[in-house]
Each structure stands twice: as structure tokens, then as C-alpha cells.
Length: 300
Image 1 (cartoon, helix red, strand yellow):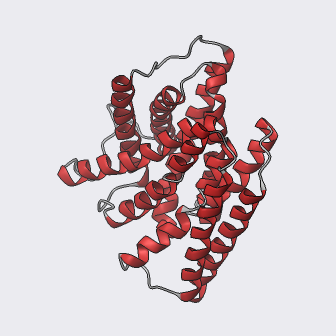
Image 2 (image 1 turned 45 degrees about the horizontal axis):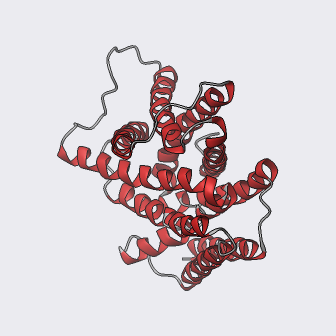
Image 3 (image 1 turned 135 degrees about the vertical axis):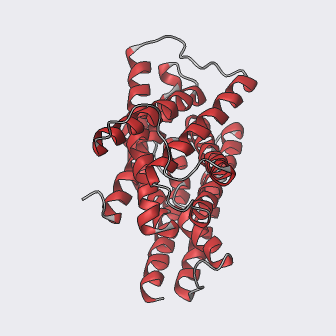
């Protein structure tokens, strides 16, 4: 069942939205968002590794050994993948408390059109007029989303512009992982390597930035948020690479659309974030772009 692209898409996109909501709740529980992200990535990687061993019934001892040799090519791939993975996550968790979980979730809707545009430029796909129109609708949605942050406070308005860099990183990562996927590598091995690299990079950043890596006090809320985020990451990123491997980068990028819809709903239900007119218009424009890009794929 989980091998079906649509099921993978819905699961990964839903988890992406929930993780954004958790990021906004982090300061309330005493966590710095980047500290929570750091330990959640590490815990998620460990959890994914244990799940993989249980699922495959391995009996060998020692740490995980990828199928492909650990050479310069794989090392460079994991470093770049890790950086393209951790950068948008860092932006998302820091900006969510400033601009709202709904805004950040909606920004995840744009990688579809950007990924397709990159794929056309790199000649991974042919330009089709229907999909090209979808890209334009998606870009219009980006403009409307930026406008939707105009009524925020000055600091929050700045963070809303920073949050719009999220889809650029995600689309770049989608294309890079497809173009340079190491021959013979399993999705789970690459997911673990990417998460490990992201954890190291974020740990170094937190040390240099003086971010406290522990909550203000260890409470049930603080521990609960960490446990929830670890569980989400362990499943989300294991399925993330599987989805990319089976369906390709453009289809994968639709997880942001799922996250946008669910994230806006959760933002309203959990935090009382009421979308304004510009945000609703952004949803409609992005939705139209997604439909056109998807239909264009069928007739191309």
C-alpha cells in the first residue's frame, strides 16, 4: 500500500504540515526551534535506522553500511543533499513562530512549479504549454503570498520574505537528488546520510550562533514535542526518498501542496490563524498551477 505514489504523497505531505505546527509550538514549550529541530533530526535518523533493521530482519551487527561504496561522489552527494535539506527546515522552524504555521505551510506549495521549471531548463522534461501556464500561476501565487504578509509587524514581514526562500531550496534539492542519485543506492541509505549531514551542519550552526540546545525546563510539553517530531521525521524522510525514487522530482514536489492545505487548516484549528484574502487568493493560484502542471504531464 505504501508503495503507491499517491499514498506516499499524502503521508509525507501531511507529516510536513504537522512538523510545521510543532515548530511554531516549540517556543511555548521552552524550546528554541533550531534546538528542537537538531535533536529531532538526530532522533529521526536513529528511529529510521531501527525501523529499517526491524523491517528487513537484518541480523548483522555494527552501523549501517550503504550499498554503494563511501567515496568522494557519495560523500559530496550527501553533503549537498544535507545542506539543501537543512536550510529550508531551519527557515521554516524559525519563521513559523513569527509569521504563522499557515504561512510557512503555504510556502511549501511552490516547489512543484519551481521544480518543473528547473527540470525544463535542465532538459529533464520537455516544455509543455499547459505546464508552463501552471508555472506562471504558481509564480503569481508566490507574489500573492508575499502580499499576504504585508499586514504583519515589521519583523514578521521580513521573516515572511525569508520564508519564501523555502521553495527555492526544496526545488533545488528535488532536482539535485534526481540528477546525481548514486548508482545502486537505496532510498533509505540516502535518507539516513542526508539526515546525518543535516544534523552535523545544524549542530555547528547552533554552537556558532550560541543557540541553547536544551529547553528552558524539561516539562511534559517539551518532551512530548521532541518525541512527536522525532517520530514524524523517522517516517517522513524514509518515505520521502522512496517517493522520489518511484515517482520522480516533479511528482514529489506535490507534497508541498498537501502540506499547504493541511497546514492552513491546522494553523486555524490549533493557533486560530485566520487566512486573509490574499492568502486565499494565493491558495487558489497555486492550486490552479498544480492542476495545470499535473494535467500537462498526462498529455505531454
